[in-house]
Amino acid sequence: MPKALNLLDKPSQKPLESQPEARFHDVAGVPRAEYLHEARAAVLRAGYDMTHDVLIVDDSLTVRMNLREGFRAAGHHTVECATIAGGRTAIAKQVPDLIVLDVLLPDGDGIEFLVELRASSSAARVPVILLSTKAEVKDRLRGRTVGADDYVGKPYDVADVVARATALLRGRTGLGDMLKKDAETESAYRIGDAREALMDELSRKNDALSLHAAEVQRLNDEMRMFVDAVSHDLRQPLRSMAGFSELLLDEYGGVLDERGRHYLKRVQAGAQRMGELVDGLLALSRVSRKTIDLRRVRLDTLALRILARLRDAEPHRTVDARIQPDIEVFADPDLMESVLENLLGNAWKFTSKRSDARVEVAATAAETQIVCHVRDNGEGFDMTYADKLFGAFERLHAASEFEGTGIGLATAQRIVHRHGGRIWAQSAPGQGATFSFSVPGVGGTHASG
Amino acid sequence: MQAVSGPILLVEDNPDDEELTVMALKAAGLHNEILVARDGAEALEYLLGSERRPPLESPALVILDLKLPKMNGFQVLQRARAVERLRRLPVVVLTSSDTDEDVVRSYDLGANSYVRKPVAFAAFATAVKQVGVYWLLLNESRRAL
Image 1 (tube, rainbow over the protein chains, first blue to last red):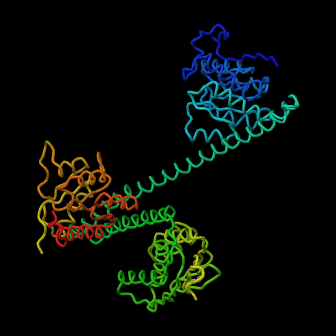
Image 2 (cartoon, rainbow over the protein chains, first blue to last red):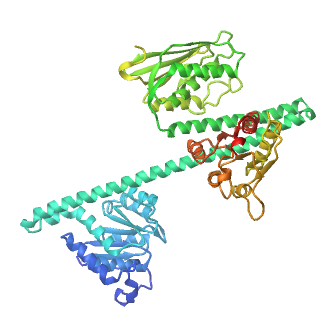
Image 3 (spheres, rainbow over the protein chains, first blue to last red):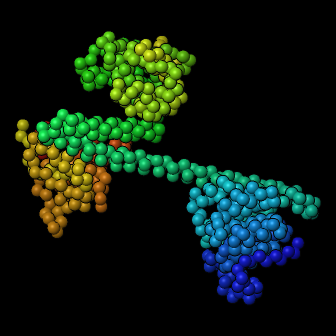
């Protein structure tokens, strides 16, 4: 198929033969004769020398010329152009067998052009090799996601590009061509080709996988940096606000009237609350990052310790606490403490208006799981809004009525989920509330026995 | 009890935190001289001496922030602990961060305590007071220096 379309869209374009020899040197500095030889060898090694039409879209004349030389040496026809518009025209005239596409083009983004091609009827299945200096992981990933078959970073090696192109072309048309080959060698080719195609596929999948892994790692690192920045940078200004307003109140409170002192207290309360919010978010994010350390944990012991702390903080309150002994689970001790801290803290808080406050911790065994219940006889809530309970920043009570950040239950839920369990609530307004969560039991010797 | 004399070296780059810490130390009734280094390099200058100044004469306590300009708190700690004379000097890390990595790394590099700065001033003042009282009044580290 001798098609010598020349769509080079630079007006000053001279015929190939009149270009100075020096221009055909590869970017990497490999002498021309050498890479041409390698390109030919790559084709011969593949046992395959059928002619294909290759479209080269790159705005650098040197790149176009080098690739043209390489592909022609390998027995292919080439069409070159410098812009996306040129590429469109070339494809409209003749759909190529393969496209080598630069990412950064004067009239647009090569990757967007690729998206356009993949959506078109004519060139949807034409193999595309992206060529770019932006060979960063995310660019490759972006290219692969929109349907590039390969991605080569600049500076590149012409022989490498031609060999990759040959492999792609063989993958597409291999079977039909092979039938034309000598019967004796046919099955050998077929097995060899199939194996190579599989290896190619495997290495492409591996490539994609490691790109994904790198991307996940990068996002994790970014998240960690973000959390650290929040931890350090947001808390400091809060400390200034809280600290100096406190000092102002202490040392100059006498100069202010009642209303002035009230304003100052509002500033302090705001700083304090924002501090709690930041800490809550940090706790939530830490729960997701923490490696879970599974061991036998006594929930009743944890509950007693937490209730002692709550009593210490508010010694004036009388709360009847009933804790079932010997609740043993197989879970992360720190995380279980955090769950119980949140649930008991809520129970403690929402019974604050009752003189006969009661908080209860009990457990039931179900199959391999232990279901732990934290019950109180406090305010309770309307079950209509129960689905909002475990979302971060959701609260069912006015801030003026009960303090809280709304992050505690989200944290508890995330912890329980990370243990493969479930958390739910049962309540009615004025009827108290029961929060239940399931976590793995200790197996053969479990708690309720 | 006899309080350990000798200056306290406060390594803190934020002027607000510096003022609040100094205030809290004074409110705790500690009368040691307080010297302030505003970055890691200046802290090392105080501890190791330089062309500009001789090393600090028998410091009683170092209160060290981690996130500092020029040289961070970890580097300060590492460099200080490499000097025989400073190996047993009480160093308390007082910082905003409480990531496990930072806590572990601080102790590994030879910090004596790790305290996270609370947001509320009352809690902050209590924390600083306890640090001061413990290291300057209760603890017998002076005998080892």
